[in-house]
Length: 277
Ligand code: FE
Ligand code: FE
Ligand code: ZN
Image (cartoon, rainbow, N blue to C red; front, side, top):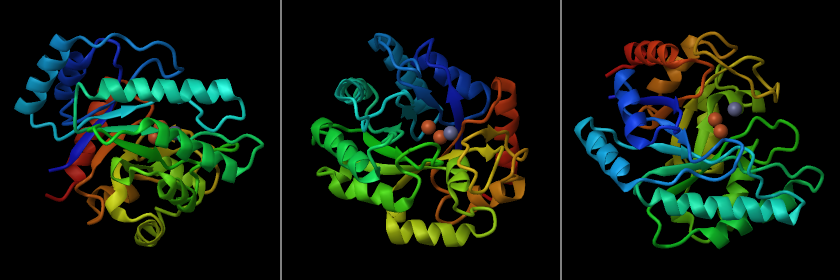
């Protein structure tokens, strides 16, 4: 069975997201742990979580994916900004323990003018301060498009971060199809080649989730502008190959396409139809 969902608003809590997912025939979803621009997280209500966990069990949701605010920058040159990223992430991971066994995805960050090496050092250092043996959440580094000075455009950069993290078993990678294509990996013309490269550099066993997005500007553009499935430069044929690829087909897929709930429902139906059971 295809594990597929989309990004949902967390404003109304866990149970509301679960119900929304069911409504659009998703069996997973992604959500921001707090306002995507950062700020204080909403209090978690245990009753809400319990209702959600019950629903998730009934509906057979294999997992959900939390996304850190995209403004966090654990490799900023500014110590205050790095501190804020660290504290926010530590708090998020504490909150994730209410729904154990899931994944938490984040953008590695932007090194601005410090260079990628320093960026990687800061990111790994932050993770080493936050991660704990007891946590039941897997933290995912997202593959980036390479906009500005984003760290994580190449598989090598992600590998380098992973290598420097002590609790490696708590880490994984989330592959964003728009980002890797914009970043210069040809998943349209040579999906096998890109996945072979991913396996060689990072290891496919570390790939835990896929963000399924078409791309408005496309190959090597470094733009990071998501398009609806089949309406961008990646195209529906390539999307079909991605969800059915033997190395990917068992992973959870998350749409982050510019859509309202109805649009997401349509894309989910389309992709289910294209999935070879
Ligand atoms: Fe993201
Ligand atoms: Fe993404
Ligand atoms: Zn993006």
